[in-house]
Image 1 (cartoon, one colour):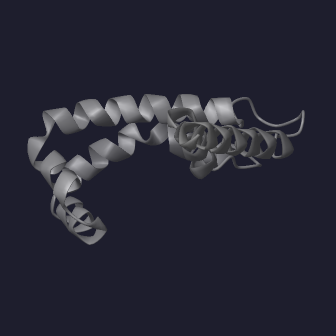
Image 2: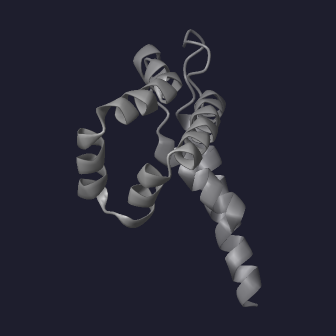
Length: 118
């Protein structure tokens, strides 16, 4: 019975996410990619590249794995070249944010992923 409630909760969450996505769908004149699918694609591209970058930079990965946000910021303040590389990796997200009149929030995509993993 508990599993059934968990599934029902996951379906309810998924339904809420889908409803939010439909209600926040951009107008017909919006830029291509200014949708949940466009954001998901950009997030996937950036996440894959970031994963590869972290694997190639074990010191930075260790900081990200074990530190809090302040320690992570301090690390990259001291390693500006690495920060610059990560900013380049993040360009698709920045470009999407700058070109979309209506924002789809990464949190909405995270809610979808959370519902899918339940």
